[in-house]
Image (tube, rainbow, N blue to C red; front, side):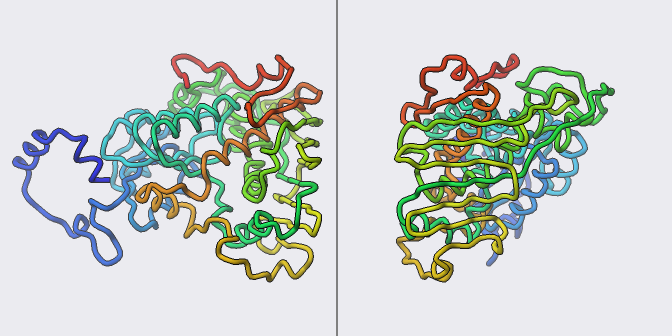
Amino acid sequence: MSSKKLHRRDVLKNLAVAAAAPYVITSTALGNADTPPASERVTLGHIGVGGRGRALLGGFLRCKGAQSVACADAYSDRRDAVANLIKGKAYADFRELLARDDIDAVVVATPDHWHVPVAIAAARAGKDAYVEKPLGLTVEQNLACRKAFQENGRIFQYGTQQRSSAHCRFYCSLVASGKIGKIKALEVVAPNGGAGGSTEQKPVPANLDYEMWIGPAPLKPYTPDRCKTPGTYWIYDYSIGYLGGWGAHPLDLLVWGCHCDQAGPMTFEGTGKIPTEGLYDTVYDWDVSIQMADGVTMSFKPGPDYTKFIGEEGWVGVARPADRSSAYPESLNTLQLKPDEMLPASPGHDQNFVDCVKSRETPVSNLVDAVRSDTISHLSNIAIRLGRKVTWDPKKEEILADPEASGMLSRPMRAPWTL
């Protein structure tokens, strides 16, 4: 915001520009009852403006106190269309957008393999970031991302929008406030992945900077299915599949409602299918069992998005559709919780981020919790691919006594990209 920017700018340069330009104060600059003046707005850059990025853009354009001024995307038609819409500037390289000192924060909705590299670059450039789920391509990326935002004092909002939903907040608050007693078991369900995808090589479209789209991932021949849904989610070079890509939502509710994953070492064991033909090669039809400390057990399977907490005195089931959320005893569904028993409230996921950029408070979907939930996805993937039990120590943040499994916590990045 302007109080920060003016200290960063060259005063003499500003004076020279002001002397050369006509002195005009617009109504937009002054603001009005509904729109704060430009000096009080959070200026946003949008990195990745495909389907999900455009959806997020619509929300941020409705936010009070925010102004979208730039965008970056590997597809020229996407970035040009959005730049025209917001009357801002389009960039083929997100690093040029991050170099602007008049941008306070960025909204990252790239393909999954770009989430953390872009987010870390943003933090180091002094930008706050709203980052779509899942988090990193590896656990190493997750930890590096958390470190970058902590060291640079930047605000991070994770794209797990259910935390801004009133019913999810209520039901997770029932669990967090102890209304079902000590947790005995957890059940998490996320939509399944699948096989397929054409491997037929095609010419790279004229509107796509394929080298930038691939970025830190291995360079492979262009096929249309590689660069569109579900390819970007179901190809292992870019994602661990719906274990993380959709598992992020119900697993996020799990870590919001309880801290069972932090109690001590936990062991992952599971099965799943990995396609051997076609383009897609991430795990689907998975069945993961997790033995947590203190005797808590957890299952993680495919199905409609759902998180269930089973306690000694009842249970709570949370789904993003409110009508699929419930609790037992039934009296819990209408229980009036005290204000100090409720988890943090949000006026809307995008608005919460904008407000926190101004206040420097922690957003409702914080980075520490994002790392926790995403780590569960990655460890499930590692156990399935190795076909054996894997034990994780959440305090040391390392796999115990298994060098091969530990080696899967990271992946090489294609030069010149690094963390």
